[in-house]
Image (cartoon, rainbow, N blue to C red; front, top):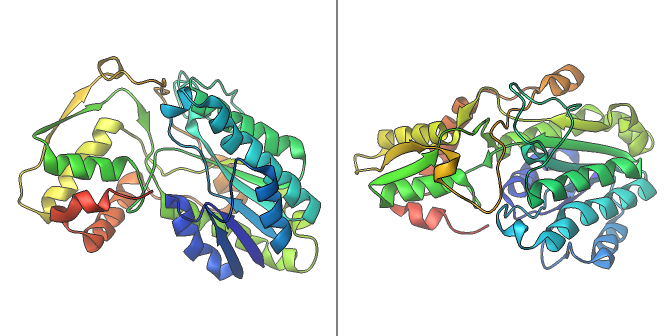
Length: 314
């Protein structure tokens, strides 16, 4: 199969470049090869390659900045995926993209399912929901994987920020009244490839879109278990202490009210993964198990003493 990956330099895109290789040829693009604010650029790259699968791992993810740039966020998070979905439908291809827990308001007492009514609290959440709706309205073969609290050993994410601050400060104050499931970018990439692989033979025998038509839709895809941002930070710092005897910051729990930000976050970001498990027979391990693996990888890339350098890049 020929796969076109958009957003190769992001933390999920970086992992997808490796996991998608098992499916066939992968054309991976990012800026400057493609400009997501340009419809002509998006259509051009897709029509040049005519892929059987298009995976969109690009997004506007600056949650607070989106409050000041809602038009740009909407262009990247909604308009661009809609164009990709239309091009995929025209080609008879599968379109895969990623959504977020921020489409919900976090008031539900337990985990959100795919059929729960969204109610985003932020511009970022509204633009991602608009993208979900636009892809669905196109009517082609699509998979939307809705995830939460994505992190990894590369890029810009909460894990790398906390490892940097833990080495630099005496104390870190972290919100303790927002719960979710930290999800490893590699796990997202692996499940994406595994889901596509389940229908690869059928797709090779005919129209790719037809091979996925009966399973198209939105699927929650997060790690098992739950924690707060503060609990996540404590686990990170605890693992750092196993690698180094250097002094590390104390982690102090605070409320959301004590940490004002431009965009309101949901208090409950838990997503129910039952549909994914039932349809594909796949599930992710507990977030703490994945964190152990990521921390081992992070130490192999750069030990604690060079943590500042690791925190750079996209």
